[in-house]
Image 1: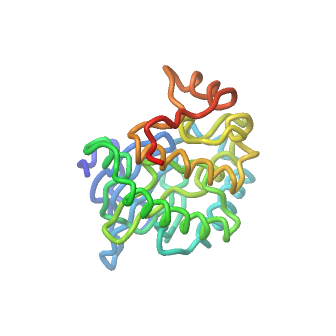
Image 2: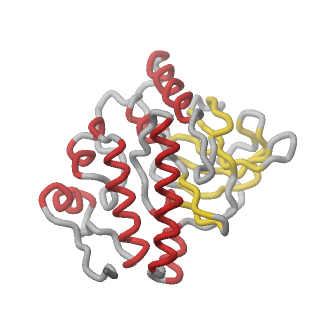
Length: 238
């Protein structure tokens, strides 16, 4: 966790902010504390990802968040609250999981043993079952969105890509090229449950080899490979 800066708010909703957990492609993440001292991770969506703040666009965002809040399951970080901050930007709070991400673990220690990856696969797959059962598609499953706790992985940020995309006037590619499915690369709106399963496979390739199945010199190069070439599966144990 990093300290709050002068540009950060001290509160969001009813939560007192304790520090920054990180900054990603979709927004800033803070560690917050409720009035009952419950810790939550609060993600504030970046303004440039949203279209003009028309009421009907905000309503669509709210509908997507309502769907996300229906997701329940042991291997997910439950959404507990949502709203709009003082700057008019949407935010949502999830249960705080004090654990590193899969991306951090592999970056620090290298590829993981096969049995560990199988343990991760079972937990992440169960998380996807819970997410899809609620009618939600993750659309950005990747190593940095899997937290690895001692009692199993936790999938975070599910459905946020859909919530953001549904408020945009221009539909671009939302997600992470190295881990997304080919159909999502062609049209984000075509990403379904099968796309998440593809991303699960890509995430497990990263866990066991230390690299994504699609890699290149730029996001555009990776997208081209994704829709025209086979994945790089070298080095994967039988």
